[in-house]
Image (cartoon, rainbow, N blue to C red):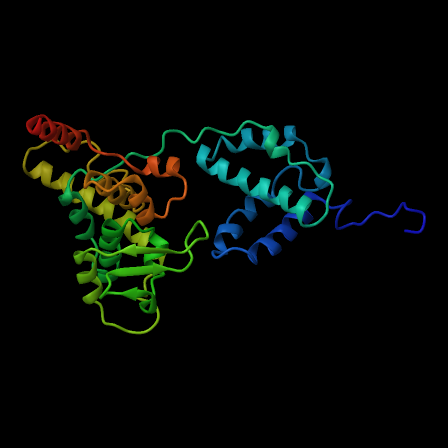
Amino acid sequence: MASGTWSDPDKDGLTFARALLRYQRDALRMVRNRRSVESYMPRLSAVPFADKPLAAVQASDVAALRDAWAAELKPSSIGRYLVVLSALFTMARQDWGCQVANPIKDIRKPSAGRGRERRLFDAEEFERVLAQSDNAEFKVVSRLALLTAARQAEITSLRWEHIHLEQRTAHLPLTKNGNSRTIPLSASAVALLNGIKREQGAVFAISANVVARTWYRSVRLARAAYERECVEQAKVPQPGYLQDLHFHDLRHEAISRLHEQGFSTVEVAAVSGHRNLASLARYSHVKPSHLVQKLQRLEAAG
């Protein structure tokens, strides 16, 4: 140190593996959902440059990793891993005082694609899915998702002290993007919540993971039951019906319905919680049939 040749192992000699552990520790203090950080760690811990000094990790190293991941991950998943890597290098430079560049800025990012455009075929498709489960809470959570455009985790984390049925609002103190949001409740949503025994604390005992597993299982069972009906009735099963239907698609459906009902983009964003209107556009899929009807009404009025 006196001669000026000493290097701080927590900065200058920091390997990627050690930096990842430190990032995990520090990032967990700043996020609401621990799994949003922890779920990325196993794969990132196994990168080829784990033992390389953090400052020596080059864009070519990350590019090779991106290409290797392409064999097993979707482009959207690769993009999320790259976001975590970028956050690690940014934290090392800004918070830890490490003299490192951010190699993620110098590589091509995989295209996220067009995004999902799946909407419900009709109301019966939704009811067929719910009919495959005896879990009452699962059904209420699913119906609220369709009525409120709220995310799965937002609904399952609702607390009675944040719900005001008289004002028909539900407050979300902390959402995925780090902000709070108050969502309006329709009369149907209020009726669903009134049907639950009122208590303090959490509204639902069911977890988001259980909801997800129950949904996928119910979709598979509903499709199988539908195909049996078609065989009995000598009908050809409709392609896509009760197939590739995710729980998160209910959020797409709800947001698209708000647009079709005449809500402005700003109003829809206030309900959905989107801060970026480009992101909101990926969730909005107005049906052509609705546009045809609207055009006909305008022509008749003119």
